Image (cartoon, rainbow, N blue to C red; front, side, top):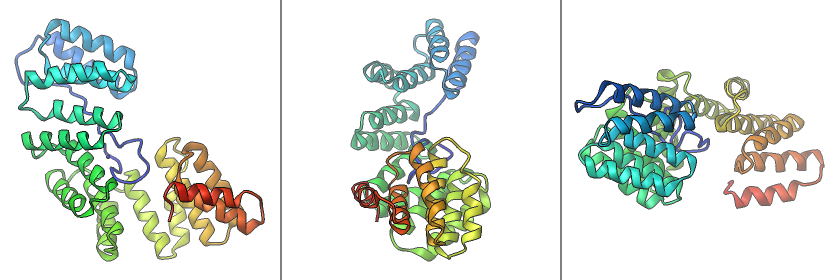
Length: 301
């Protein structure tokens, strides 16, 4: 689910990868420094450097739980899932009374497409530390994806309480209330999210969608345009919603262009497929039926 939207597409931020930069037990200073540097490299996507730094940190202190978890996340990012699990289980055995190893095992379970196991790991992390926001955000997203909307609503409300300075709880709750058909409540939470986090991509998307729902097309386009320069899933989602706005305005050529741009970033975006189908049909161009079928397969309404 990250400081971005934990529920709906975009999903580039769905794994709240936990990076550690400190430890509570006395450890060699150099081990701590290397763990900090390794966490920084991991955050920047430099997996080779991260692995080297974290490995040396563990040479200084083989029982350094934070470094074990960070190295496990490196291996998870590399796709070395068996090695990642080995490292994370060792970290959990060394200290089962901290949330981080449980959370990281949840991240790994999601990577191997076992959301059921991931939910158990996130719940275990929360049993250890109810204030551990990353696990609560990911748990809420998984509940949302599974259609467990009442549970997701409660999880996101709790997240807002334990982490009021993070956007995920507000965004997740607004998405969940929308899915539940509680539109007025969703709009209220959306306004709150955008007021508190005006630069959070998920909050910007929510605000734009609310404007579109109210047929405030110019305002909606302005909000979506803030994100269309991004080369990630948020950028794809913004382009898809911009295309939907243009479709509502009967600007069919523009809708086609932006739907195709969205699909170039995220080929399985159901909304973009739906808009492209409708735009092509309106323009009398071929391919509308094929795109409509694809949109339906992907779950577009």
